[in-house]
Image 1 (cartoon, helix red, strand yellow):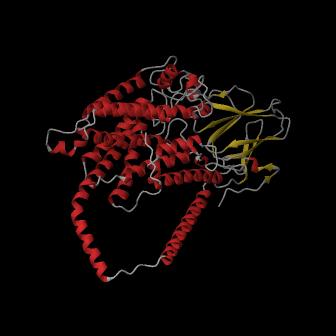
Image 2: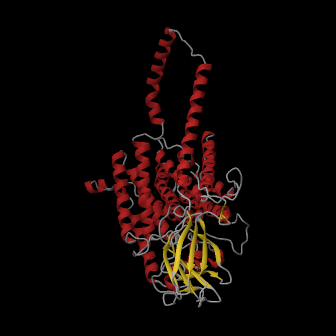
Image 3: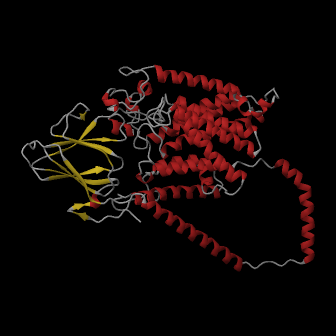
Length: 588
């Protein structure tokens, strides 16, 4: 149940292949007309939308064959030229032959034989491995570990029960104790109910814990499955859910926290200063984490994940504080049914106006040398029509404000599309992030406005469906063909709505299972959620250190990489458990 393959096949060292690689053997038929300078191979990944073929390899004709290593993670097309047509091969270029939508497998061996007439033969020489078989292995390992843990706990309980003899109190003493306890309980029950604080919603901490656990797993590589890593440009992968879920749950906690301070008559100026200090702390910690490889101010990345947290938290919290409306004067049935929305009416108007301005800039402003309304990856996108327009107006504003050297230099799109540096957490993208956090604020207002479980669950479900439908309509329920595609790099409006819809759904499930039906206590994610900032900073700082990370051998299979990522995630959850047991909680 692992991705095992023999060491050698036809003299090829299969163990030298990396994860998602195969051997690609290209040979030619030596006939009259065979080009002396050889053949040129051009490839086109399915992930590169409306791109030309890109030069990949030169196959000389001074030998019988050439063997190359090739990436197998995505489907791709292959075009063969008998001459060098440059870096890119366009539709108007003549070619010998073309193979469309090839899907190769990890550790496989493939043969391509070319003739000067343009005919070819493509075949499988060695079967690839099944890259999803390790999931079964991991599930069995988890079940075995869980069984051993339960067995150890059972043995420990039996040992303790046998080693501590039960006391046998007399009947009189038992009766007296019962009477005294009843009297004490009767005297103190009213006072205890008045002094006991409201029960903390464990579903919120569990939601946050799921997000930070998933973030650690993804940042550890996620087993290097392409659908777990961030989408190249448009699209939604597992890794693209983590950040917006964090922002959403931060928004949920904003009205809960600020309202409690307002009820205690804390001056608004004091609350505003606290908000500002927390935002500055988030931004500063993020800036420090960006310098983890050396504080070179010449190319220090200025924005990042925590920086965007700080900016969005500052704007949304001050907006809520400034426009807070506790009492709704009307008692009309419609007002009572939607009191959570009406209490935020002024905030909705402010955020809505901000989004209108943002969309106006996105759709109608153009960067120099770029067409109006273009927000693609640039480079060779659209047949290399806008090579210097990565991110459209968003990328241009970020480059104008920060300079290219202070942006993120290694976005995935830069290597797939040959685009420019682009920061997915840049300053202009903070604007739609405000909406992301505010949708969480709306959820928090729902929790404060309604105490009945069914009322809350009904609204969570309606918000989830409504946001999902609107987001799907904006992207045309497709990856690339809608008005506003789902795009984490740009933090597009459809991306905000779709991820918020999924956040509402996840909170619905957690709230129903934990706080309503009480069939789950939220463990183990509950502990991680109560110290999320510690785990985020910690897993970033200790990213390459033992015992969180390790390397054994070549680390060239999905199984070993997934196990290593799961190990790192589990160790940080044990750290969270330790902090919980010691009652150590850190919040900014």
